[in-house]
Image 1: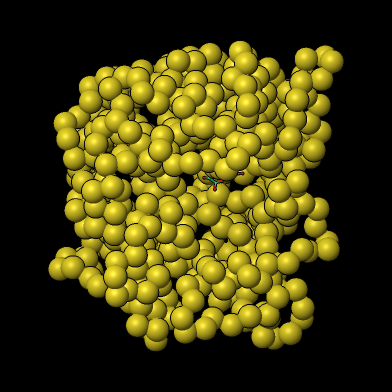
Image 2 (image 1 turned 90 degrees about the vertical axis):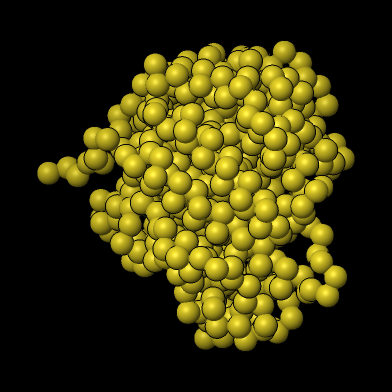
Length: 458
Ligand code: BG6
């Protein structure tokens, strides 16, 4: 008998507020850090993005045509509480109410991300972001406001997009000022702990305010292959996987820090300071483990020294994998690595996983037929969906859904619209806004078929 994916499997798309909404100074919104953060030369700015704030109805129709039954978006904190520590902005609440209602009216289940890299600029200027426990409390207040206002209709929630990045790079917690007398590592891992506590406070709030809703932990996962077959190289890759990806999943699933992470930090004098009650808060675990997956990485031999934060070491050892093709941005396409990651999550944790981001960036423009023949994107998703099916149907992985990244073109995380992920082309460039027209690409028709057949027709 042919094995099939579950009937209630989720298919859809995922975006962040700062990469879609635009309307940066409309509707009572306060300044977000993305409104003031400079972008690299030749990239756009975030002011308009793809103007989702005004065009969400049209875009939801496109999602419906693509067969979406799920959409993950993030709330812009400074639209709800403009400075992070002031009053609730009702116009901002109304915008998300309208968006949620429109999704539900079109048969699309919404999921809310509370923080997708952005936050009110005031909280960074005033308190140095998540370096401050005051910001942890302000985040909890914001989370509770969102749950009170949207929890009657939204039953899937997550706190921080790709939470493990907060242990890799200060920019994600917007706590870039390292206090005098502290090393970068000491500061980084303290901030990562503060973010973990903020996450746990949000889980606790959801349990109290919307007990029938589910909370997902969220990490970005890349698997690491040893470039050589030496035992040392293999061990380095295992440690890299644990330190870069796994420790956050471990806490989200088991309610405490893993031994390897505690030992690593304690041996270097970097273990974070706990406040009273933190131990108890960590016990607020998640219902499932969400992750983003785009590529794998290959590493040469290395060692975790006593002074450098782990991610800085790992980054220095990345080399090209001769067996894999890469995108123009050097991201190595690896669908089998995707199956490996799903298996690893499933073996380590007794929780369902949920693919919340997957896709490939490409440079594109409209051809003479006013479309984009993006066969490479079709191939990328076909391979990944196939390997996901192998993980579920062959390997027994419990997975809730396959959610693609940026299904309607949006600027990349560094505001480069030239790096497109969508099944729908948005008519703008980094230099010019043009008319922002939406144009289905070849992959639009393919993904509609794949989604509407519940992953059968690839
Ligand atoms: C994820 C982020 O890391 O990857 C997104 O959640 C981001 O915000 C996506 O856009 C793709 O990365 P990039 O840099 O190609 O946009």
